[in-house]
Image (cartoon, rainbow, N blue to C red):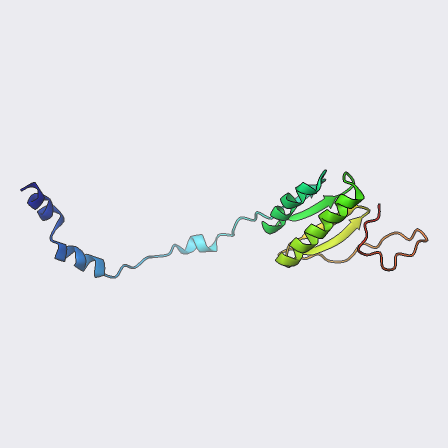
Length: 136
């Protein structure tokens, strides 16, 4: 008996099926579409102290943030490993790596355009073929 009352309140199953088949139209608020999207890109400065921090740098790059890495607090062997890891990350996301100074690198994701290059000072040493090496 209570079930019959509930059925009457909700309507028959046939009625509910008809309402499901009806077309529903949604309206779009055009003012929301015109508002500028919030910019979340940041420039992050990092001085890693161990190779294990390279994953944190890669996470920032994947989030489309620009990262300046100062490798002066790590050993030369760790610095080479970090640069190798970041080079692979930047290749995967289509980014760019540029040396800014001794032990300082600019890592830019694909959405950031880097214009120009910084030339190294001429110490009288031949730098030919030393592009991959880290100069302290």
